[in-house]
Image 1 (cartoon, helix red, strand yellow):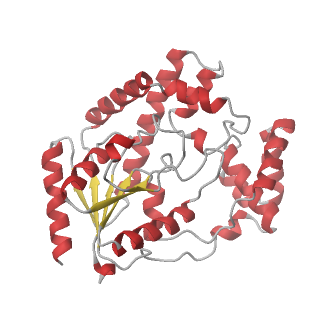
Image 2 (image 1 turned 120 degrees about the vertical axis):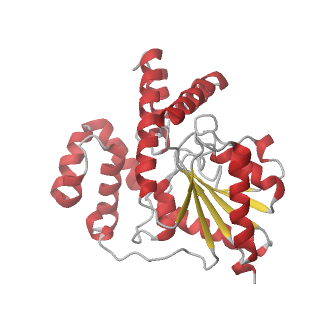
Length: 317
């Protein structure tokens, strides 16, 4: 049965080589890639998300890339649903789904779904955007503290994205976000196929830091600032959007808007990306049943062979 075909999940921190491995595997296996990346979902955000180019993707189907406009919201719960739909469709075509990325929250909700949450309400969101412009984020945070003190207490007063989302849910449903978080989530993967979890876990942090620095330099050379300038021209794009809070984009936008010098932008981008990698590795330690590989000790060809052995074993099970 098609549903019994394996699913391969490949997770790892930023700049660890996940995309290159996925493309290598797809050269010899009937693979379709499902992106597990909260940045690659956005159209027009290509360089700063290290999105594989159209040339690299040629002949290799990729899913959950370029499915949202940067001004639109996209939740982890939506990802779980969309990933399940992709996996089912790939199995129907007799092919193997390969989930690849570094958004660890997305991988987590595949194993344990988040409690059902109301969808974003664009009307309420625009009203809250205007309220922040007119009165400031502090006033909105204080308002949240009166309506949902439990959520407000765990949020930083500067966390615009989460404060705004909490207020949106409160106004939309009449119930605080803490109520929705308390609902019992679904357990288990949203498919029955055997799933092989593989992870790239570099033990040498200096190796990863070097790759991060080199990648950032490549992004600037490839035109990241021009990409951000084009986004900044849109009247509906602002720093509070989830898309623009992505590492690299946030600092580049501040530079484009004259809030940072070029040197400060580079320093802060590098620091923020290293911090992101640190958080990703912390998340990864909490995953169970993952076969870990150290990309510091194995070159790309050897890593690919290791992954192929896992695929062969799962495919013949």
